[in-house]
Amino acid sequence: MKSGLKTQILPAGTAATASAARVLAGGGLVAFPTETVYGLGADAGNATAIAHLYQAKGRPAFNPLIAHVGDLDAARRIARFDSVATRLAEAFWPGPLTLVLPKTENCPVANLATAGLDTVAIRVPAHPIAREILRAFGRAVVAPSANLSGHVSPTTAEHVRSDLEGGIDLIVDGGAVNVGVESTIVGCFDEPMLLRPGGLPRDEIERVLGRALMRPPADAESDNGQPLAPGMLASHYAPRTSVRLNAERLAPGEALLAFGPHAIEGIDAAVTVMNLSARGDLDEAAANLFGYLRALDAKNARTIAVMPIPQDGLGEAINDRLRRAAVGRE
Ligand code: TXA
Ligand code: MG
Image (cartoon, rainbow, N blue to C red; front, top):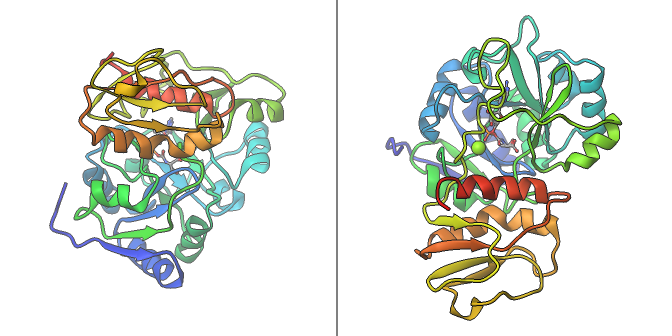
């Protein structure tokens, strides 16, 4: 992906925000922190910039992007909100929730960013730096996670640098993000559907809706035959090392991704051990997940063995990402 482009890295602040807005307006690519993971932003209305974005990530162009805006009013210019969508937006924005909605007639988001779908994914991030950049730029910014396609999402500026340096214009370094897994995606179709578990736990959404979210069948298609959640390619979040889930004991040569206060059999022979949360806190575990997967992947162990993780709260998103990391490798 290296294109000989010089990537500037700036600490977050007024100067970085101004540079980010300038780069976006000029059709360039800016990585910036959101509360979930770092995003790689481009002007949502600039198809050339978006083509460069797909190229920098090595991302298939049939996988559409999320439009980021500053508030619900800006979102209404892009997408049509029914009562369910309005209720969710009012309850959870700004925050780690993405809504998939029908595009407005004059939707300013380029077709390339929505992969030709008649729906658009949209979110209002809560991170102060993301919000400042959106305010300074003044228009929608499309931003996938700022990693090479197929790698785990970045939770620090250093992760972004190691994946994308030389292929993008600017990285705004705002330190480690606080949620650590990507936004929850809800499709506001006839029945609201959970397209991707993420940083907003399902039960909080269901409490506001007063009903259960549907789960799309694995091969669900929209009316025009395109996949409903096109990004949910089975092995999207793969580290290079194979991943083994629900480990109850450790085999020689394995690295351990632990969870909770208890040791497991064979732990003394582990290549290395990282504990997502020694006190068994799922929010802490989500924040550590992608960074620890990257660190363990660098140890060249035979396998990364992962201890069982409960399914409640952010556990649903953590287990979803871990299953994807393990696909075809178990
Ligand atoms: O937390 C996040 O959501 C981060 C930060 C940067 O905002 N972004 C992120 O973007 O995770 P990305 O591109 O890695 O994932 C976006 C997901 C993909 O799975 C894509 O297929 C799905 O959103 N998506 C986008 N537009 C869609 C649409 N119209 N219908 C269904 N799924 C859509
Ligand atoms: Mg991604």
